[in-house]
Length: 356
Image 1 (cartoon, helix red, strand yellow):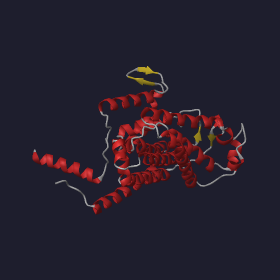
Image 2 (spheres, one colour):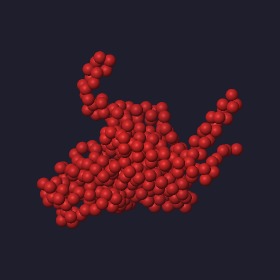
Image 3 (cartoon, rainbow, N blue to C red):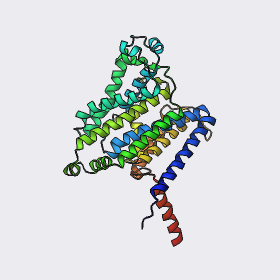
Image 4 (cartoon, rainbow, N blue to C red):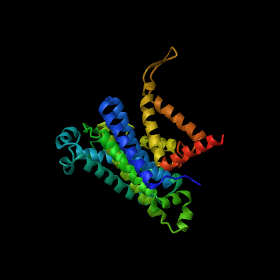
């Protein structure tokens, strides 16, 4: 008979775990140096990006490569709303900012929600025609959308400041904002996936034709999944911009390459697994910073190696290729890191030990 924990035990363990995590975050915020703390905050931001893309790619089965476009929309929207009118007047040198944005100013929470909502609105209008495609055609169309957004950001000078980007963005993305939004994202996604709507999304992923035969409106469910994923991508874009404190559309930081970074996270963790997405995001953030030294001159067994720009991406890509060849399901596959799963694993190990 399969061993299961009661709902009460699950609830108590979850509360204790959240208190423990909150305590760890408090200690990190108080005692960690600024660099390590930035990496800890980046893990949460990447986690939101990964979970939101996993809803679209892993759970619904939509092969979208346009996630960076939604992140960019959220980043610009929130930044323009948190920058003061004086900062905007000083930043917009090539052309003055449009009058309806010049004096627009609000708090960080409202700006973050606005970034998510605008990204969701764009996702609705993009998804309406694009989601009628499938497979490679859908991937190419969504990738083109992300590039279109970046080109608009480069050329809409009176709105985005064009190639000069936005500087002096307030560093609002502290550890509590980042992990607070991560908690909201995971809670919402877990509730969604475990609902009847989530089961319909999984059915679409497994067999679109069979799902349609069962009476599921495939297009409606895919579009809603696309919009929800875009909303949380926009939220992560706001947090990311206020972590970076600058937006430069000429770099790859917020370009289409970011989508491939997030894809690496969810494939490493396991497509279709929320907890896997979080693990993949944490691993990617740590590796991305730890391997930064490879781009600086270093000595390896007495041999001087000059710094090679882009070497850390090369190493991460090599790891990604090895995972795709030898461990295609990723770390978690489609499983979730739940108390019941942990209990079953421990019970199985104990039972195996007793049998020996």
